[in-house]
Amino acid sequence: MIETYLVVVAVIFLASAGWITVQHLYRRFAQINPQCGPFRDDGGNSMCKCCESKQYCVTKMT
Image (cartoon, rainbow, N blue to C red; front, side, top):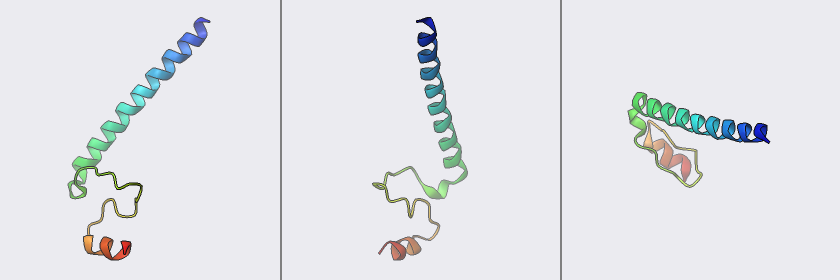
């Protein structure tokens, strides 16, 4: 019984630590790549998240 409790606590801790790591990596990526701007959810269209040439993105998407 105690083993199950410890496993559940460990899983919750690891999930929280993983999420904090993801947030840290995103902040670091945003600092290194300011041309990408703030995160915007595009509804699942990942074709043009961080283009240097917006003209290319508009042309490619249409």
